[in-house]
Length: 96
Image 1 (cartoon, rainbow, N blue to C red):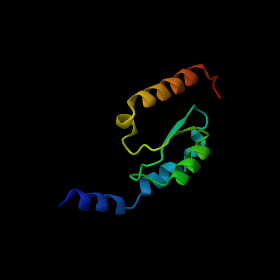
Image 2: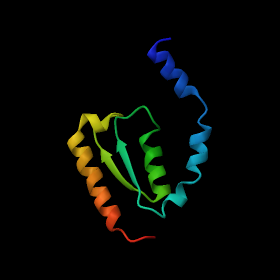
Image 3: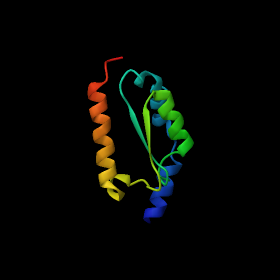
């Protein structure tokens, strides 16, 4: 089996687990959350779906324009800075 064939099979599988987890997104708003949206990531749902998930979870959304699924390798300095800023903010945020 080629890698492309495996990827197509993987992507065609029912995503029941993700659907079930998505039902709990509103409860996530009790804690600080961060959604990273890499605009060229085609391995996961659409950008609109990621924005909607972030909103449902009450999470802060950061956009990595022109980066893909491997954003942390494509621009490690931007990724590290963004994560550090979030962790600093999350550590100072009062409990909800």
